[in-house]
Image 1 (cartoon, one colour):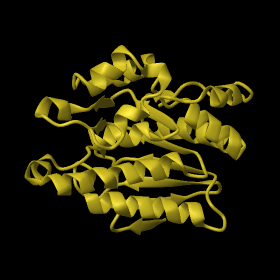
Image 2 (image 1 turned 60 degrees about the horizontal axis):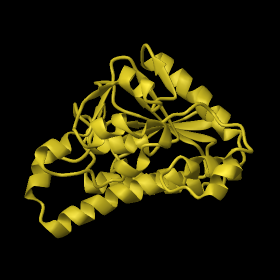
Image 3 (image 1 turned 180 degrees about the vertical axis):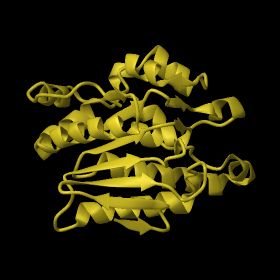
Length: 241
């Protein structure tokens, strides 16, 4: 176990994978520009390790905060160029996770709000506990997500659920997310959720890199028909985030 100060995270290794626990000591996990960059560097470091992990699991703090995106007070003070820099920092982290050479999952036990919701959607597998909830409240405050959340909702959940989350600023509870096909598992508590996530990531870790890449890309909007055909030739897990 070791702590990564700039990322506000603790790295916990086991025999096959890595758990990344987001916790900077505060009640709510805020994803500042510097923290986003540090997390991206950390994932790149894991990917470039001579013996990379078979999977990466991201979870929030034990106080019920997976992540709450950017600091709203700071957002209100940003000029256009600074806002663009923050948006690009978030997009870079999401891209690093979506292109990681190992499967990436997250466990939400509490809230995933704003950019924290984007972070959860960027993972291959999303597991939540029954007390969890998700929201993109920014649209109700006059700004839209800039971290790729609108492009991360898979085909299975487009339509009314995606509109509620991303266009109407509605709060979705874990049951809503499960019905929409956004969850790969719903657990009664964090311990059970952690076990469910680990099983799912271990299964994804057994896939070939080509199969995993086809599955990732086919779930995104605008997927070429050739990718969908390639996906049809591999066994896929249940829809997730």
